[in-house]
Length: 199
Image (cartoon, rainbow, N blue to C red; front, side, top):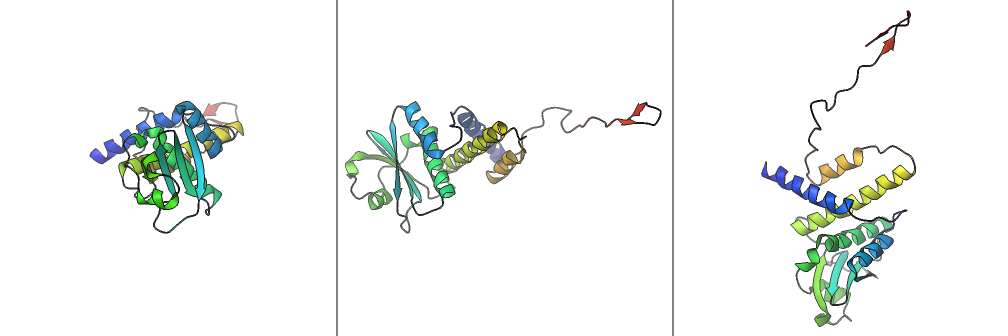
């Protein structure tokens, strides 16, 4: 019961955050992050790096003057997009304010960056940590909302399955029924040969 309540709270909090975001159309992760930077009044630099074993595929580094998102250069564009959104989600959720100080991964991937400039580091490593789970959900909800907006622009009805799939993936219970009439379907009227109708 407590886990359900906690999952509902997480889902509501993340949904509110994502619903309040401006999304570029057509959606592009780089353009979205530029919007986030303008809203925050702080530069966000995107830096592709070569993947190395035992390092995160994405890293958020906060300095005094800017935020840097490092992402694997040698992966698929779809994976890169999700890495970028996951790291941006840390900023949107405010995780950078309480994240740990500089890490060995940051020093390995950016050896030229003086360690005294680095204030905070977040890396995509352990997804069971609350901050990582929240960032992952926000990134997924951003992509889901962008997809819904694109479908509505294309005049195609939303299938309604994306939200159910995300709820299932992140352990959120299904939404509460809207009322007693939930699921009720109006009777289908059939016309008889004499012109009258019957249910």
